[in-house]
Image (cartoon, rainbow, N blue to C red):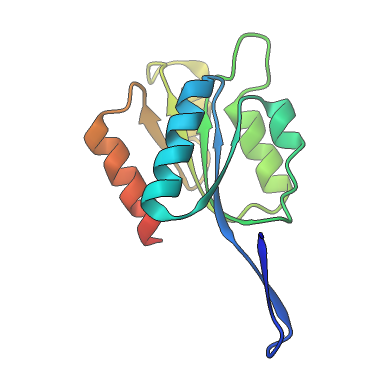
Length: 138
């Protein structure tokens, strides 16, 4: 169940969740399992912008989105996903993952966006642990 109804207060509380978008399906699954196990949060995964557009964003309260900057050749990228999320009213934190150098045009563009964090791939285990702990704590 994704929504809690509190009959005494007459309100619906959305379950907190994390969105993970990466074209590498194994990474999506690893992050999904790890965050759900460690933080006890729902994780919704997608491997493309098309899949992101199919998500019901009213179903959960997304507190974080982890977005790969490059979602594949000739495909919409993580920055496109960022703008889509903002249009949907996304208020959570956004972290971009990238395997590109800082001088890559998409990385430069992402760095100009307000309130985002950029993490280089491959992700060091200690950095992944730190990110997951910050997710759990917020």
